Amino acid sequence: MSYLNDALRGKRVLVTGATGFIGGRLAQRLAAEEGAIVTGLGRNLAKASFLAEAGVTLQMADLRDEAALRTAVINQDYIFHTAAWMGGGRMKEDPAEAMALNVTAVATLIRLAHEASVQRVVAVSSIAAYGRPDRLEIDEETPLDSTQMDVYGRTKAMGDIHAREVGTALGQEVVVVRPALVYGPRSAAWTVGMVKLIQSGTPVLFGDGSGHAWPVYIDNLIDGMLLTAVRPEAVGEAFNFCDTAVPWQTFMGYYGQICGRKPRRLPLWTARLLASANSLFRLGLPLNQERLKFLTRRSVYPTLKAEMRLGYRVRVSLDEGMARTAVWLRENGYVGIGD
Image (tube, rainbow, N blue to C red):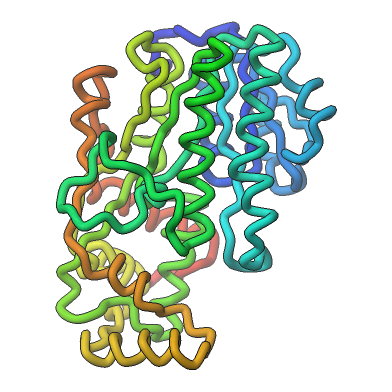
């Protein structure tokens, strides 16, 4: 059933990063539910057979290949730009690579979209673009932090700012979405990664665990992204998407129940010592002072703007989202059937 009442049916839609988590689910829903004619760009097409089954045309492309992007945008009505440099894993902290993918490629794509008369570009940013502001409520009017130490957050902020500036300068319709912690089936970071941490006994809670996590279920995010593509009120704007703010002990508690293991906790004083030692002696630990601040602060990312301007509503609750996620984790062997 179409979430947009067929507003995109028959429209030609390009999705960058279609082999990734967000882009994959977006492309799948656009083709299977919204009736759009979808082209998905990615670098690893072998892991996207489910998209071909949904009717998505897959093309291999690199964001740094301007010629390939120019060809891809021809005759498209809408572009959803979800591809990005994420850091971590095999992608080391390479600021030049991050700049090329998270900043330069965004501007290039918007320019090419304008030249090809694409109606609208929806660019995916992140709440990481805000950095760690010392305020409890971080809405869309909060300044982005393009000088923060974190490479991902810094380049996301720069790309976010650049996207809207370039769009305004060219007269190209551009919308920016800023998702929180996107979880659900196929999420490597905030689902599979969390399960593996708990299974390995790695501490995931610090102090009393009352610092806030900001989960957004994948289909709730896709709902919001679809609305930003068709609502005229969205042009030139940015929108937060976060289901709710919950304590980390609650968020990780769901995964603990799924795994059948209690999430490991570290006293705050111990965590602070480790973070300080890590910074001082460059121990290479995943815990540093900035990350500890991220895990213990109690900020919220309200979605009032999306609710008021787009009619956005959270359709999948945290309980339901985690229940769906648990089924997927078991079906794909990440946890045992009896867990």
